[in-house]
Length: 158
Image (cartoon, rainbow, N blue to C red; front, side, top):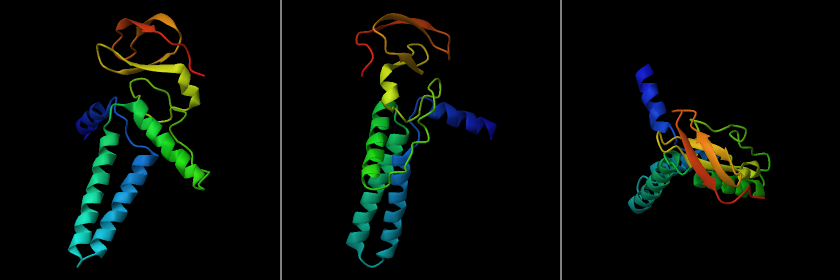
C-alpha cells in the first residue's frame, strides 16, 4: 500500500489537483448520470446525456492532472466569483493559505500572489515560487539543491 501511495504522490507532483470547480464538475457528472438512468426509453436523450456527461468528466480530469497551475487557479477563482455573485457569498477557498514548494499544486492565486513568480527548476522540473523583484537572482531549488540564475524583467504587479 505504501508503494502505491508513493507512486500516486509522484504522479500528482507539480499537478494542479482538485478544487471547488472540479468538485462542481464531478457533481454535475453524477447528476447527468442519474438523469441518463431516468430516461430509460428515450434513447436519443440518453445518448446526448451520455456524451455531455463524458465531456464533463474528461474536462474535470484534464483540469486535475494539468501542470498549468496558474491557469487552473484563475478558472477556479472565476468560478468562485461567479458563485458569489449568484448569491452564495459565503464560499471560501480552503487552499488560499497554503504555500508552494515541492507540492505546489494548489489553487488560490489571490491578489497577494501577484508579487510572486512561478518558475520551473531546470534540473528536477519542480515548480518554485520566487518574489517578483526586478533584476538577476540566484535561485536554489529546495528539492534538488540545484542553483541557477533567473532574470525578472518586470517588478511586482499592483
